Length: 147
Image 1 (cartoon, rainbow, N blue to C red):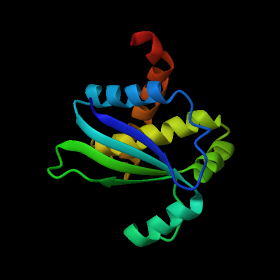
Image 2: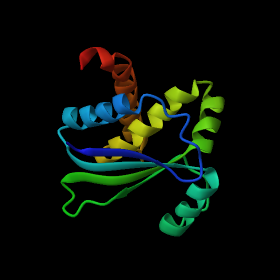
Image 3: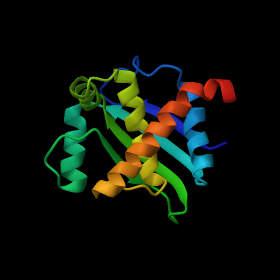
Image 4: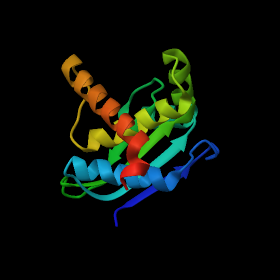
């Protein structure tokens, strides 16, 4: 079975509930997207931690909610690390007036969708990415019934 793991650098993991269901759902997304998932590691951290990574690895000097690193050797399999700033997700949820756990799910899915081939550089790509995120957020609500 493909490995999906959650790690917590400088934040508590108390906010992440129902981990087994979420792991199964992320595997399910890969099945639907016809991607071969080998390993997927989500690392949750603070704004400051992700800012340092953004500076060091991408030469960006700004806060972001998610950064992903492709660890695959051939580019065909998904082997990745996805870093998520819990601080940024909380701030986004407040600004967007959505529940934290829904925004967190969106960012978790967003990170995976990048490794499924979706981009968000242009307005058209952003609309397609947002549409996929919405589809999978809705599907997650029903996921426990399906499996």
